[in-house]
Length: 637
Image 1 (cartoon, one colour):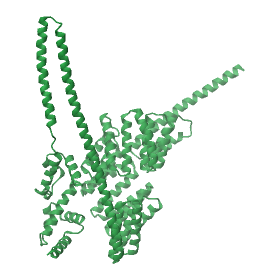
Image 2 (spheres, rainbow, N blue to C red; image 1 turned 180 degrees about the horizontal axis):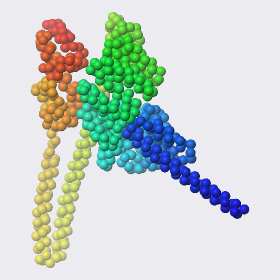
Image 3 (cartoon, rainbow, N blue to C red; image 1 turned 30 degrees about the horizontal axis):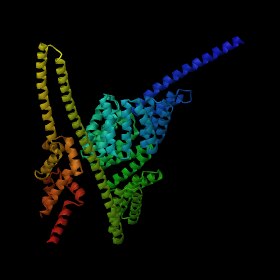
Image 4 (cartoon, one colour; image 1 turned 180 degrees about the vertical axis):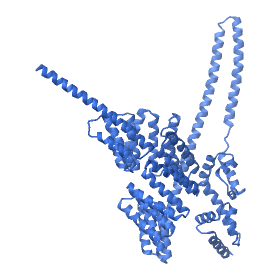
């Protein structure tokens, strides 16, 4: 019996040892696959399905929690690239739940928070971020602290609050920079550039995109390098620098085809179509838009398909092919409606359909679509859309000659316009309040620093005086010769103390009397002088750099001055003055010939640029404005 028991124990021990050895082998294999999959997701997107299929071979085995968490991490990365953000959120969250509080759990939680925000699962996002914040504070690690702020920045980008996104992403980047960490800074700089681009702050956007390109190149992050090229191309396109936009877009497509990132391929093809449309190369543009639509269907992402259909419709509308435009706008509307599309996207489709109906003179259909758009815009509290749709509906009734309904809708338009102006004023007021509170805090900090300096000066004087008294007391117990030497030393020290006291008092007096000049007002006055007296806007080559040099400051501060004081960017400000100059010249001149040279006199580089800007600003062409001005002047006489 004893021999049997001994043999049984030995057999069980051998089986247990073999099992432990197998588990360690599996854990090691899973770790290697996990590391390769994660690196592939960072710099490429071409074979995540391969790594997922390989790592899922271990999913049914008895594994450690760490290995199971790694398997769910790879699942999350795979779902994120599809994109299926809801599935990715679950995979990352479940992986985190398997772990105790450690660095890797924090990584998974923050990844889950990012994809939850992109999936618009904001309640889930808040719960995940509350857990992540506690863990970040516990770990006290700069990488995870930076990642926490970056995740909050991603959330603000999802809700289109790019100002707040910039604050958090800048914080994330500065944490890594302060700790000499390069990894992830390429992505944070890219997202900062993207946020500034959305705010039309192009100088800042260029700075961060270029920084991201340098870092991405150092880290061999091909996917992110491609993203930078795409956004830079869009910026050049918006600035009508089409050759540079095309060159960067070709670089972007070369990279994303190399890494087989279908989402980026679809966006790149779409951007190519827009560039060729802007330059009226219709055949090339059509080819790229249709290829972009095909790529969207291949990705099978509802948002991408709806947008791609709408973009093809916009291309045909711009080209003048109204039947095809209507067909694709209708497909986009139906697709978005059937697949629970974003209300703003559905609004856009209805608006486009109304425009096409008007061109086709199908006024009944146009009225129906625009009414739906007005109702939807009002129900989702989109005041800007309410203004646009009611204005278009009023124009339709005026075109039909139905002045009763025209007056009725016009009243709705005026109410919506007043509401929008009120909202904008409230927004501006809130911004001013934030600026005021910031300045108040800065003044309070400056006052506290001044008080601290004064307190330190007093402590120095008291300390020196105490040393003097102590030294004098000790000298009383020393012999006469030593006393005399000590007295001389004390006397010299007293002179030094008096000199220091005079210097300190003099500095304190100057500090109190010092008043900082109102630099901002001086710069604003000089800027107005450049615009209104020297008419610098009439120089076609005028730039923000040139103006900053004239003002004696840097580009960033000059840009902030324009944004704060005129509530627009530099290009818009220059065009305002040019248009004002042209309007004044038109009013004071009866000669039609002046129209040919007026734009060039005002500083526009071409006649077409002048006409486009004038119509966009005034709402009519220069010739129409001249006729209206002539009629107004004759009526006034």
